[in-house]
Image 1 (cartoon, one colour):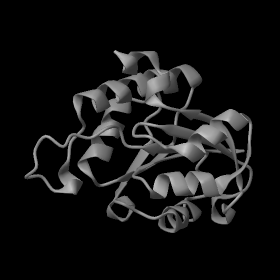
Image 2 (cartoon, helix red, strand yellow; image 1 turned 180 degrees about the vertical axis):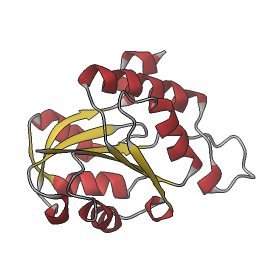
Image 3 (cartoon, rainbow, N blue to C red; image 1 turned 90 degrees about the vertical axis):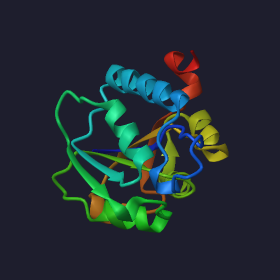
Image 4 (cartoon, rainbow, N blue to C red; image 1 turned 120 degrees about the horizontal axis):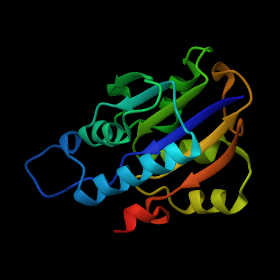
Amino acid sequence: MRQLLLLRHAKSSWDDSSLSDHDRPLSHRGRRAAAALREAMRGLGLEPDLVLVSSALRTQQTLAALQPFEETPLIETLDALYLATQAQMLRLLNGVAQTARSVMLVGHNPGMQELAQALTGSAADPAAAECMARKFPTGALAEFAVPGPWSSLGPGGARLVRFLCPRDLSAAAD
């Protein structure tokens, strides 16, 4: 069984209007939420061995806030993930080496939520699936169990294990 972690970047800052969308950093709230997510991931033993991350500053900073991991994953920064669609993200996942046990994709909405909804064939926690369908907020993480090879991952091909939102993590509420 493979593991897929879909992470939407944490809350970004709009304070500097001179910055392009690609260059927006995390806000203070986003940094706190990412730190809370780091602790939650450690507590759950969520350790990717491959991370595919958008080249946008806010995704890079979100990933940096999750580190260090216990085992250092291979990290691939991809321009193609910046504002990628569901179909583009799925194609990237289909190209992942079959030796990868756990993959984390760090990206943006609306593609992230659309991909998560498309992949959900069943859910260990139906309430989590319903919550995810309503909204995939900044800093949210969806964990999936993927029974087959990455190359055949498609709609309905994964089981939603859990859905973590920043508001549900105690340190993010400070």
